[in-house]
Image (tube, rainbow, N blue to C red; front, side, top):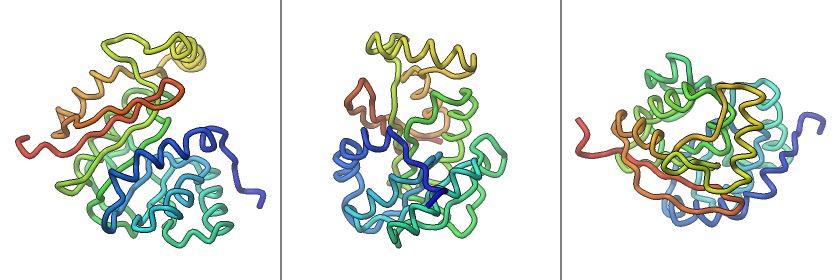
Length: 212
């Protein structure tokens, strides 16, 4: 199908991410919203193994939405729902309005390899909207490269960051502590950091019961 995009990153990270998501999401029915789904390959892969997941893909790109639908149809991925058009910098998202056809609250919101190829306003918007859409035990999960204490975790990440900023000065690998502060300001607390292949991290946040 001509609309199907094939993302190299999917093939590199699908198995490591599955191993991380299994203990986090592997019990009971879970409503999962994926932000910036891109090609749409992760949803069918994860739900084929974790059959308890109801997967809500989303993207801001029409081409991505076409690819998500194409993979859903090609793989007959019944647990993958119709893709949502989501702009995480828009008021509709940030104010917590219910998505078209989706649940009011999600058990997990997942963002993979996105926040470094968008301005920081996208990270802030994502967190603001996620905080309003997670249930009390829900998880906000990031995957990708991060700086720690303001420093890159590997020389290759520094080179990658320079490449990103040469393309757009607002892009760049985010500092884990800054993201954690932004989450805390929105009532989400940092609960886990998991080291991943290729100098990436999985970073997990959840609603802070003590937050006002």
